[in-house]
Image (cartoon, rainbow over the protein chains, first blue to last red):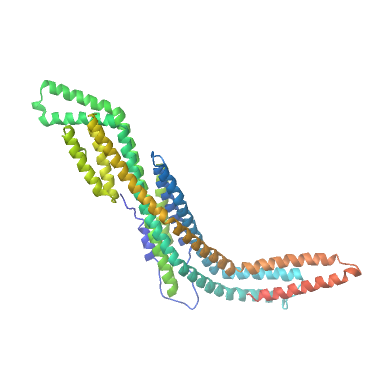
Length: 315
Length: 167
C-alpha cells in the first residue's frame, strides 16, 4: 500500500513560525488556511466512512454490518462538521480582530446616521466628526486585536483536551474501519472465486496436468502426450472466456481496495497532523509572538486528499 | 499460494492440508493481515479440491468455507463493536466543540461591534418613526403625547451619545 505524502501536512506544524517578537501590539495569524485544512480533513474522514460503508453493502449476509457502521459513522460526520464550525469560529475571531478599524468606521457611520435622523448638531461639524472617527478607528483597531487574541487563546486552550480526544477516536475509528474495509474486500474477492469454484477447479486440474507434462521435457513426450498437451492448451484457452472477465473483476476489486486504503490512510494522517498543528498553535499563542500558517503547504495536502476522494468516486 | 495445493492426493492428503489451514486460522485471530492471508488460502483449498466431489471432500470444503466466514465476520464484528463503543463519547465531545464554536462566533460578532451597530440601526428606525408620528400630532389633546414623544427622541439622543462611548 502506498503511503501518500500527506506527510506534507506534517510540515504545516514545522512551518508555524514563532519568532518570539512581541511588538507591543497584539498580532493575529490568518486562520483561513487552518479553517480550509480543517474542512479538507473533515472531507477525508467523511469520504473514508462512505468508502467503507459502500464496501459492506454488496456482501450477502453483511447487511447488519453495513447498517451498524452507517449509524455509527453518522456521529463521526457530525463531529467533523463540529470541527469545521470550530475552525470557522476561530477564523471569524481573527478576521474580526484584523478588521477592527473597519468595524469602528462602520459604527461611526451608523452613529452619524443616527445623529442626522435625530436632528443632532455636532459641535465643530463634519471636520470634528471625521477627526474623531479616525481616532476611534486607530484606537479600536488595537482593542480589536487584543480582544481577538485573548478570545482566540481562550477558545483554543479550552478546546485542546476535546480536540485531543476527538482526533484520538477518529484515528482509532479509521484504523478499525480500515480493517473492516480490507476484510470486506477479501470476502468479495473470495466470493468471486467461489462463484467460479467448479470452473476454477477444472482449470487448476488442466494446469496441473500441463505442468506434469512440461516437467517431462519436450524430447521425452510421446506422441500421445504431445497431443494431450495440445488439447490441454486448447482447453485452457477456451476457459479464458470466463477466466479473463473474472480476473478483470478481481483486479477492479483490488484497485478499489488500494484506492480506499490510501484514502483512509490519508484521512488518518491528516487527522493526526491537524491535531499537532492545533497543539502548536495553542503553544504559540500562549507564548505570544508572530505565527504564520503556511497556506501553500496546506493547499497542497488538500489537493492530494481531494484527488484521493475523486479517485474513489471514479471507482 | 497455488503451489501449496499441487500434488495433494486423496482424502488423507486434503485432510492434512485442511488441518494445517485450521491451525493457521487459529493463529491468525486478531491480526487482520494474517486473517486475509489464511482466508485466501482457504478459498484456494476449496477451488483446488473441487474437482473431487466426494462426500468427504465436500465436507472439508464446507468446513473451510465456514472457517473463512467465521474468521472474517468475527473480526469485523469486533472492529465494529469498537467503533460503536466510542460513539456516545464522541457525540458528547461534539456538543462541547460546537459550544466553543458558538462562543467564538459570538465573540467575533462582539469584536465586530455588531451588537452596537444593530442597536444604532434600530434607533435610527425608531427616531424616524417617532418624528413621522410627531408630525401627525396637531390638536390640544395630543399635546401631552407630543411632549412624551419629544422626550423619547431626547432620550434616544442621550443613548446614542453613550453608544458612541463604546468607541
